[in-house]
Image (cartoon, rainbow, N blue to C red):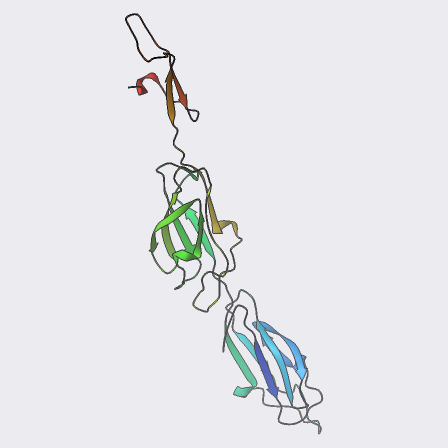
Length: 238
């Protein structure tokens, strides 16, 4: 009698005698709702119980005394009987996840890496590294700090300007009740790094045709960088 997110239960109400006035509103319901009320016969009725979404409140369905009558007009008086009530343990709260990182500006250059922290709202035993989608780099050092906190190191792809994106989609892990995460589209379920791991290069050319210098000769050298630089200076040249 446990219901998780997405679960329902079919209830059957069996009367000891035929009744023409037993209706859905005779049933008390908390922690959820009834639907699909059906009179199978004058003594048997069914309905579907759906627990409240995102809740841990028990579902309780009961029929109190004096709610319906038989052909002679006698009303029921068994409201306190144990079989006049059904209780479900409910957990329809889906686990959520937030990803954070330790890089202040979310920009990674050649040689950089960032530690990611995955924080779950509930304990999970099936959240694993392969649940994480990664582009523009790779994960390493996957560590389960606890049942709700996991860490990993993101390293961007070498010689690349492709953003690093780390995310966890919906339906990747579950809580103790079997509820799957459904927050894959939430903004805190993804981290994006601006990546530039392309190292600049330099080419040196000169204006002496035969690369031969005699007394009094000089040559003009040209240093051409592959990318703009603000710190290339004369003392960098050996």
